[in-house]
Amino acid sequence: MLSNHLGLLYVRYQHSEQGSWYDLSSAASGFLQVLLVYAALLYKEASVVLIDEPDAHLHILLQEKMYRDLCEHARQISSQLVIATHSERLIDAADKEALRLLAGELRKVSDKRKVKRTLSLDNTEILLAETERKILYVEGKTDIDILRGWASVLKHPLLQFLEKPFWRPTAEKEKHFVTNHFSSLQLIVPDFQGIELCDGDNKGSRNTSSAPKGMRRLFWDRYEIESYLIHPEAIARFVESADGKQAASQTEAYMKRYLPPALYKTPFESFATLKQTKGKDILAEIMQEAGLILRENEYYQIAEQMTKEEIHPEVVEKLDTIAKQFNYMSTTS
View 1 (cartoon, rainbow, N blue to C red):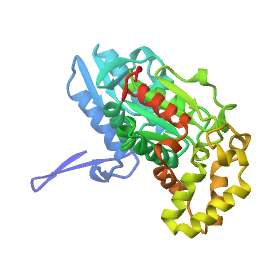
View 2 (cartoon, one colour):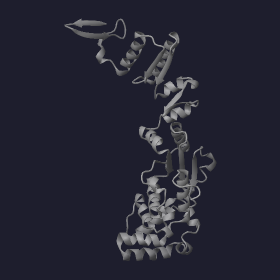
View 3 (cartoon, rainbow, N blue to C red):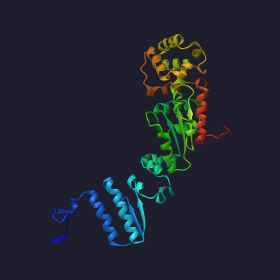
């Protein structure tokens, strides 16, 4: 109902013929959204109808009804309907042949599940997918910091990536998180590349053959990445830099007593202890003996103290593999 008073226009509405009248400006956002869309459709017929997020502010049960109404309107006037949406409800309601993904270019996507997973990506991830075109999946930030420490010592080509990496943690994620997340990123950038670097204790739960195209799954031979920081000379040097020579001598004596003799003399060898025991637990005991409180997120400082000769060959091999996958070095380097 419209009324004009002293040059001002008032618009009122009521939910039923017997209901109270309300000022339109006080209506809910969803109500106004529906009114705006329907009013635009009734105002003028068009051969192409473009609508941006008609589901905005609507209850999920009303989103599908809105879609059905729009499709019926387009059918009646023989127009083409183009809808931009982030609503899973509308994606479910649409025929899969009608779905298109707009990411750089318009692409046909027949698998609704992949489209819906892409909706879970935040704006930052979409931007990084388009600009970086590669991602590293690791257990947590500690892994990134340790890898960066080693790459810095080695002056490795991968340092360029590790200085500002696009990465995501896998610890405490659901079983198929990496595969689903990576597949979503590939919908944005089809030639997207990825590496999942897994702890050695995950070999039984993750299958190397199950990695999607464009991604490789790598496993540490030892229990976890911290296991490769257990090099007596490097640890003693770190303790000395942090707490002086006396603490370093005390730590070295402790390691001689409690580390397996072979491990103390040849830390590059493959030992059952380092495959079955968390490296961070061993390091915690050593740091406690040294009188140092070193939190897990500070272990990268040991990596930064290592010399090139003290960095395990497997670490170099992993860095090389990731760098090749990400095109930071040639496959013949």
